[in-house]
Length: 376
Image 1 (cartoon, rainbow, N blue to C red):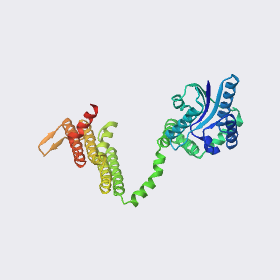
Image 2: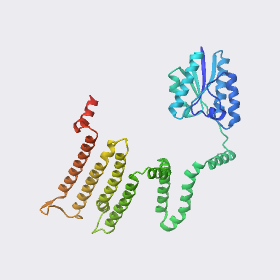
Image 3: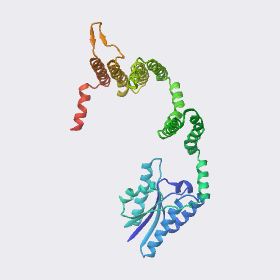
Image 4: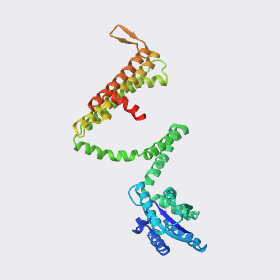
């Protein structure tokens, strides 16, 4: 019975630090690899994982079992590529030594995710997770703190928002009191974490390059985006003016609806302008127009109609908006007004579907029937 003692390194830290290629097989080869990894980075936990693999191999041989120790590592730019590299190396080991089972040695949760890959080829008798013990004293804490401060990304992510919060805290306490001060700081820290966690910082960093590329390529959307931003500011300004002069005892909901009712036409016009620029870029390009860009202007108009209809319904029910009169003859109630806007939005969206279907040489019936055929 042959047991394969396998030490896995999914991220290929061993290969990056030593320049050696895996798999590394045999007692002497792995013991030499321990020296290479330790000299390259004495703090790497891979050293302990390699030593644990040697210890397990020695114990199995002491029990008169045939054991082979080997080290495999991932390679490739992606996680899938790394896992496939480990699988290929494991296949070579199985073909060469024909082991009956494997003892897996890992030093992290990331490496432990390779267990299903190994199990698909050999029975796994044990998974040995190596946890390095650290001295918990003042010197160790100081060393870890020093390492933390040396990491530029961690400093900018954690220390900068925390420092701003501590600087603002005294001023907010003196000016507004504890409640508003701590609420403001919590919002500031939350916004900083979301800014980093959602990758907004990466998007903002790419904006200048994207803008420069768009301007050099002569895209119409650059101009329409600027016009859309200006129309958005106009909508927000007019919405704020509508809220800033309330009539009577207006509630918070009424003020919100007043803002929405006044701002939505301009916001919809801004979105329509921006989407039209993107549509023109698609028409100019040689690749043709994709369906989402055809539907986008109609969808913007439909959403704007529906949202303005609901806002007008609430305002009319509260007496903040006069009844709608059609052709100076027919007075429309609040509910009828809402129904008209909803129907108009649906009609506009259907027109958009029809236009996109026509330009893509597909009929409306084929678009509706395709999901039914797929279900069957």
